[in-house]
Image (tube, rainbow, N blue to C red; front, side):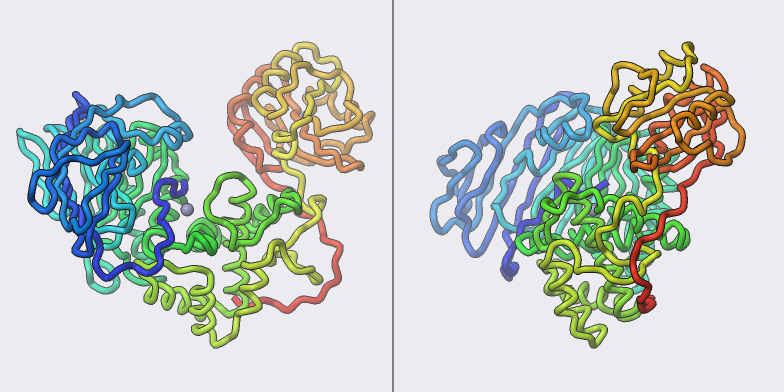
Length: 591
Ligand SMILES: [Zn+2]
């Protein structure tokens, strides 16, 4: 799960005084009616604001006096010298549609329903001055509903007449997202290393309320971990909020996740920590978008990768190898320097902006040592909290903490694309570089995602033909429409056959025999033939065993081999990597 909504604009130095927005919002999710009154004030003068056209302005007062509205579409222009404007407005929001995450991202309109209401900033639902601002929001909802916006909870009460809460966001904010639903609340008070308290809260749909204790514990654990590593968590509250749509958003002081998504075990184990860390990197220090977004890389390194290090060196090494494997598939012409990464729009952008950047932080830590690296993080945080900072400011902090000039390191890894020529041995994959894909152990995914992959039936096991094609339709992006009877001359291939007879067929094709594995109802393994062609073999005891693979097998693309007992994988693994052809001469890194 990554951040999608919070795109802080580059802001050259935050003005001493921010515009202040005071918002009073009433929302009835059943009728989808929204009424709001807003006061915008800026001692330095207001020139106008934006409010999406579907929000009808019913009254406007400028510096305390009723005024005529000058509005063109979303843009409201104010007379010169305006210091305060009061706006009353209303709208009928759209109903909640059954959207998937991509559609939620593309749609961005405000929706309301008793099951869940979401008013993303991109919907233009509040008067927006187009610059960083401070806000206070008071929210009223009917009984049975609760809601929130990012920030600190100032007041809250609930009675027969409904729910009312007030939130304040005193730091410079770029946007406001509002969420409401039939939430059940659970809360935990966490004491930070400095002695300050943070309110950790879940806002969950009743049907997932039993997940709350686990989310509270894990959120507290992550907040504590990063407060110790970097400096105190910067907000007074952290919330995990459930959404009726299968979505995932990170915002300052909260994360908004689909209720079905919240049930997935890896969310608590990885994504939650990643999102919480964005309260430091991204929502605490703002990346300088014009000079490259370092926040995803640093968050990936200190969250996703750090959790692999917690598991052990084997898991960490596997992640590093996965990064370099993905990078090996990036055409050199599409490579680009870290300074040009802003956000993840496609796979290559995430290979550079997340994975390469994370590896660069690892190489930096290997070079200057863990102590200096952590002092550098703390220094960077102290200096740039709630300010914009770029790679140059990171370089300064780490150079100061380590007492080493790092100009060449950052120029090489941030300003330049690719990597310098690599001469040495690095069997641990700790240096970013292009590696011959043949070095990486074969995995099933190579066949699963190949655009030209075909499926072949080993021998004349006719009863396997239809289920083999059905399995291929589930597994292969290539979606072949027939099952071949003989091995095609070229192209990745999925081979399906019956254990006991498959062996002779493989030998006749000059393919290696089945590797030694436990016995099960099905065995699956990946390999490459002498010409480097990737193949995957599915060996089953009978038709039922083959049919049982349709659901589970697509999820195991990262494996080299698996043993199944019916639909259940009883053993799996990745073959050991090959050896790079390179001279041996490398200093061991400092860790
Ligand atoms: Zn992220």
